[in-house]
Image (cartoon, rainbow, N blue to C red; front, top):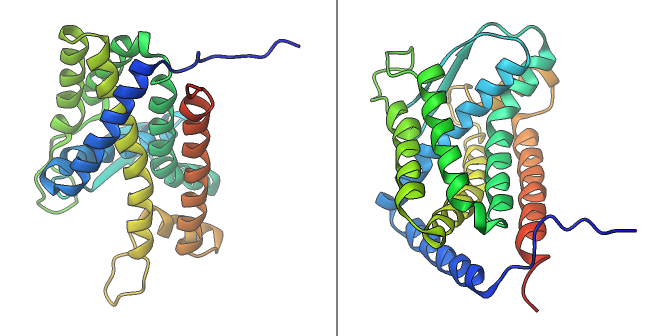
Length: 247
């Protein structure tokens, strides 16, 4: 029986690029000013998860906002059922995890790295102008950075894909994938910490909404999403890198 092998064995050049990307990600996460742009970008990805969930359930999307304090909000038509609400609330966290996992998988095809960055850049710009909002929402007076976190990043990725060679495009893709995996897990655990009952805490996180319709605590859903994210990201790491590691 033939064995499907979607990704060839990683060559030494890709291993070196991957190692350099891991080193850069460590440095990024030690310096808050460098980490911030990545968090803002992945907030946009989180909100786009809500956008796609709304579209798939047949609801009209009003728009999504990303704010300077690394928070975001998506507004759409009213949920048609509790199931739609569950999927919509889950789509932010798990959508971000799936996005990072997809990037990890795409790093296993280094010859297509430039095309991947170009396609991702075009998609981000398109989604920004379809659904991204810079106008005021009902979330206080926080500065809105939706344009920068989506279309701005998209233009940068297209620029790298256009002017850089394959190795630099792969290096950029590796950094986005590794940092995305870190942020996906770190954000869920941060929000889990926010579930500690503090007087006056606003119940406006996605797991709070799921708790209201399922009866299971918000902490339960945070733990469940964390475990699911670890499984998804671990599978992507294994399938793309560990399975094909040079002997």
